[in-house]
Length: 556
Image (cartoon, rainbow, N blue to C red; front, side, top):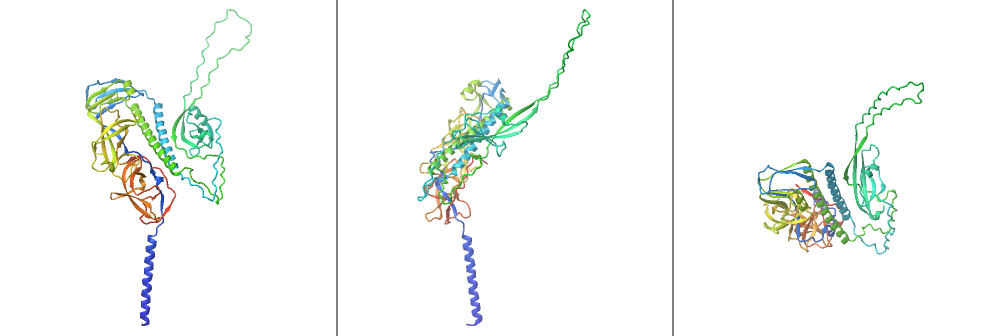
C-alpha cells in the first residue's frame, strides 16, 4: 500500500475513535446523576383513621334568616310578631349593646392566644418529626448510662430567668398553668417612660429550670402615655373685716396676723395605658450560664437519637396532629365569636334579609339559655353548606347520601344533612384541610333543615361516613404521591438498591394524608417524587429527613 493511502486510513481511524470516545463520554456524564435520597416510609404515614372523611364548609341560608341573642347585647325593641309576614329590609328588632371596648379587646386576645397555641403545636410537631428513632449502641461498645440527676424545682413561682425585654431576648419567667398576670405584675417590669417590652412565659417539668419545656408563650406589652390637665389653683377665702373693738388698749399683739397661703398650681399627672398582644418567642437555651457541654471523643459511641422507638414517634406524631386539628377548631371558633361581638358593637338594628314569615319569636333569655335562634324568618328555605369533596368520594357519596354536619359554635352538636347537588366541573376554591393537590375537587352542596341550630356564616365540619378507607390502607403524606394521566405512584427503593416506580391506588384524603393501596411495606424507603435525578433505575442513598409541617388554610 502506498504511503499516502496508509496515512489517510490511519487518520480516518483516529478520527472515528476520537468521535466515539467523545460521544461516549458525553453520554456517560450526561446520564450520570447524584444518588436520590430515600427516607423510611414509616416516618411519613399515619395510622388507620376510620371509615370516614371530613371536609369543612361555611353555612349559608337559602331563603332563611335566623337572629341569635347573646349575653353582650340587650334587646330594646321588637318590631314584629310571630306569624307576621315581612319584606326584605323591614326592621325586625333593635338592641343596645352593653359590650365595652375592653370586652372586645379580650376576645381579640383570645383569638391571638388560640392562634398562638396552634402555632406552638405545629412547632412541636416539627420537633417530633425531626426525632431520630433510638438504635442500640454497637456490640463492641457498652451502652451509656442515662443521667440520674434529680430535677430541682425553684423555691416559688413566678421565677425570673433573665432577658433584657427585647423581642430577641425577652424577659423570661418560669411560670405555671395556674398563674395569672395583671397590670400590677407588668408595671413592675416597665421602667419610667418605657414604651414597650417583650415577656416570655415558660412552663417546665416540676417547675425546675432544667425541666423539660412543656409550654411557652410570649406577651408584647406597649405603653401609651397621656397627661391629665393640670388643676387650676384654688383662690384663698377672702378675709371679712372684723368689728372694731369696744375699748382701746395699749397692749401690743403677741403674734403677727396670719395669712392664708395661696395654693400652688398642680403639676399634670401622666397616665400610662397598657396594651397587650401575643407573639411566638424564640427558642431560649435551657441554661444561661454560657458553658458548653464537653464533647465526647470521636472514638466513643454517641447516642444522637431521641430515645424513642419509631413506633413511639409515630404515635406521638398522630397524637400531636390530632391536637392540631382540635386547636384549629378552637381558633376558628374564637374568630367567629370575635366577629359576632364586633358586629354587635357596630350595629344596633337587625333588618329582614328575605321575604317570608316570622316562624319563631322567643325572648332573648330563653334563646340564650337554649342556644337557639331568638327570631327566625322563613321563606320556605333551608341551610346550605358547600364543601369541596375529592374525586375519589364522588362514587362513594352520590346525590341523596346522608352526611353529618358538626356545629363548632354549639360545641360539636351533630346534625343530619343530605347531599343535594354536586358540580360537574372541578373547583379550585374552598376551605379544606391538608388535601392532596393532585386530587381534583368538586363542590358539593349539603342541605340542612331550617329548624337546625345553625348560624349563617359559621364554619362547620361535614363528615362523609362509609367511604373508601379501610384497615388495609396506608395513609401516606401527600407530598410523596405523584399522579400522572390519572394514575398515582410512589418512588421507592428496590431490592437492588435502585429507584423503582410503585403504582398505587388512592382513596380517602384525610388531614394531609391519602389512603394508598399497593405493594408498600413498613420496611420500604421512599423518595420525594420530583426532581431531575428522580427516575427509574437511579442510585439511592439513605438521607437525613428534611422535615417541615403541613399547614391548613384556604385554597384559592
